[in-house]
Length: 287
Image (tube, rainbow, N blue to C red; front, side, top):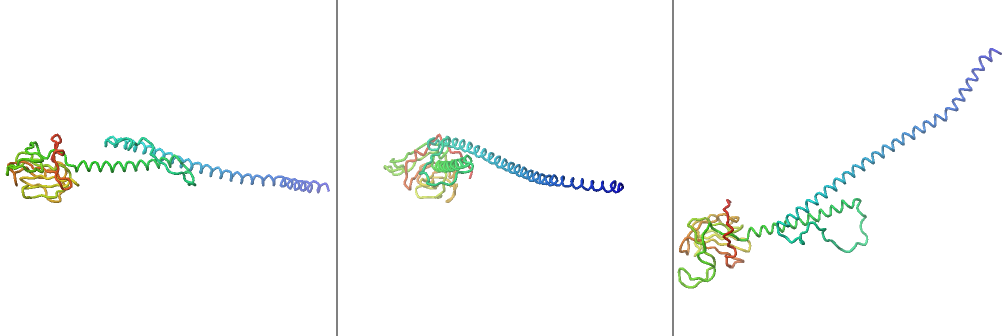
């Protein structure tokens, strides 16, 4: 019995202690697994939040950069518009690029939801409005430039002097008073005759009384260059102000080398003197 007590009793006690240890350690092991799972889920949530914050910061940085670009574009548009307005001599109240564009209209009953980024939307609208203003200004400047280029102006020959004016005069052939529908500019034989404005050649050749004649149309205005010794253009040619179109001669009804210059508005001759300006020399330009 003593031997049995010495051998069996420790085994029984050891089994009981092991069972007790197993029972005590079981709940603690289960809690550790739960805590580990919770910790893993929490880490995943932290990672998701960090990724979301990174994406949001990226979008905010992109929007901030776009906002800065729009502001810089607005400043450039305002500066360009003001510069063009000064160059064109426009009324500042008509094209004032520093002032807010005038707007109005009745308030809508129910409007759409406000934009997520109002500053960006406002700048985008302002850029659009300034673009429309610049487009209108560009069209106006182009029309003015075209009108200035096609309106006859300057002096059609090198030097020379007015030998006969526009209006009534004593005809050099008949000796009677007769209307003179142009201005005669005496000049050296063979001197170049220049176009007084951009246009299209409507006539180039001989005509009774005029001799060799070049007629150029400039929209509602036309110019004639008569008594030439040579014609340098042909019908349909596009010419620019200052381009040689003929040479001074004495062809046709003429008493000596000169240019007979006429201006027609809507098909009727007018006094060419307002279009003539000796101070505005027409430099020859090649075709």
